[in-house]
Image (tube, rainbow, N blue to C red):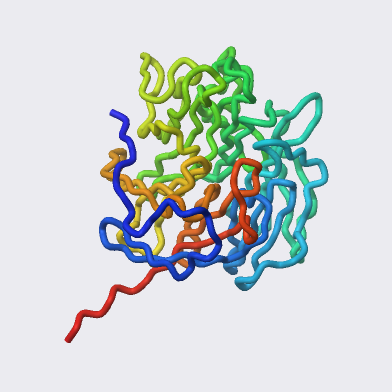
Length: 382
């Protein structure tokens, strides 16, 4: 049975988004005390993070800029600006990921929308050297896209393969069309070739890159520590599609399975199609997903976090393997639209706002990259 969010974060309010909440203390239902810190501000729809081995952060902005937070400070000039990016509505420059062997090869992967015979998405590999991105190599291209429902996360899994989530490009039929790359999860080698053990290799009527089918617009992608299960967050139907609003999902995505869109969504079921682990109605618009495995919040280890655009919050899901134990809303109403969420190498939980994406109400500091940091428990009186 799909679960709805129910736990409450003490200290949250319905206040308008503001950049001045650093002195506000929050406390979770199980007693974890934290506050927010601003890492960078004045940004334009920061979409994704990737940490370099020295702890510096690369991040993307939707209009096409790759930027660097170096020694804790934002570098003024971009590291790189994608020359052929096509930002419109929900799409543009999206994900950034490092190769698992980055320390040796310095490879950085970007996922972005471009225009060629209509709107499409591609993944391009670059070499990072002297704080610049050079030597572009196309890994995969011509993934169908549209101003909305363009995906895209492109992340390396525990098996060293590159997994790519793609949107349905606002054409429902493409999600069940297995000769299309739209509405799928793809699995590739690091050079863009197809792994021989992909589930549909050699099967008539299927593109060999496909790992899973029947997705609408998955934008969160993470692997559970220990189990190595792949979790995805996915946007459900909008009101204008005539299917009601909501039905956003968290799915455990496995090889060769069909996740149902547009035949099933939310709590609907059909034999041969996978229902979600969690369903959210009304919509929260989950734009990201990350497992926490740091040391600053020990009680959060193994918890799954998703950033929510429409919900304007972070949802914390306490997991026991495949089982959802309980859920809790963090920062609801305090920072506006939340896009990326990720555990940093310093043990803190980072997130970005998306209040300048045309659907939010930005203040003078937006957009921002922020992090949740611990507050020590008060000392007991002697």
